[in-house]
Amino acid sequence: MKALVISALASDFAGCTLADVPDPVRAPGEVLIRVRAAALNFPDLLMAEGKYQLKPDVPFVPGMEVAGEAVAADADSGFVPGDAVVAGTRLGGFAELVAVDARSVRAKPANLDFAHAASVGAAYNTAYVALVRLANVQPGEWVVVHGATGGVGLAAVDLAKALGCRVIATSRSAEKLAVVAADYAPDATLPAPGFREAVKELTGGGADVIYDPVGGDVFDESTRCIGFGGRLLVVGFTSGRIASVATNIPLIKGFSVIGVRAGEYGRRFPDKGRENQDVIWAMAAEGRLRPRLDSRYPLADWRAAFEAMRDSRMVGKIVIEP
Image (tube, rainbow, N blue to C red; front, side):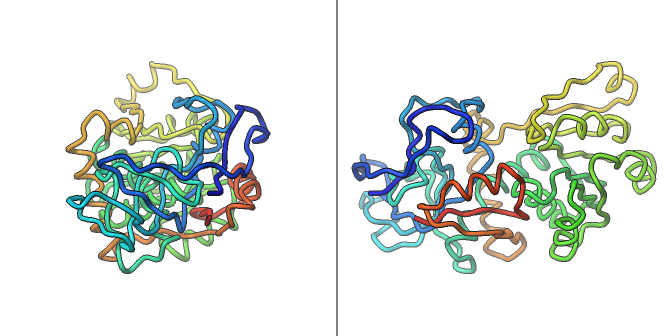
């Protein structure tokens, strides 16, 4: 089969190649899936350069989530060949075939095509763990979502609106924010950085929750416009700078800084992790969550997909189709 193989950790994805590799051998308890779509996530880029907390031994095939068709499965798995499925893979998704633990596989919602279905799991799980499990967000609260035009940020905008929150979406791109405003109707959109005073004015003193996958200057400014008792969610550092906080600021302002590792949350609390996925996929099947697909790339054009994400050229999710 064809697969994207990372044989060396190097900048500019120099260690990545499209290669012919043996088909995966399905073990008992696994489902073999023919991949129709695999979503690209920022950790895939970080792993290719050795900058992610998960550092698989090389060579490996990246790709954290897929949608496709079951090829083979155990008789008691609940899946038969031809079933349309979605799966969290952690690794292996950017290939024509992948073998996945059956516990990480579920039926694809009928209202989503393969590309949109592949775009749900990781981004919305991150948003759900952050907003619901860790921040305990409540209807009517003010939620600021930074990086709101990327997959993880846009999922948070969508979920927060579905939960009845008042949402402020930020981005450095006014053009891309206009797309978010048209598709998801946040209560306000603001440039980032440069949002501090507007957030305080809109919220009457400070945001209840700030969801930050950007870090750097955006994180620094967020500490200045979060309300007393607020929750500042550290989701990532796409800006490239890992920020630090002067501890007198959360002391005086009474807010919490909370790290978000959605995948690790599910591994440490598997029952809650399954509940999270059940809720997310039920909401998606009901049409209450609406993943936005920015672009599709054939597997042979993987580099163009990686570069589009690296350069933040998307609004929503990028999908690779083997």
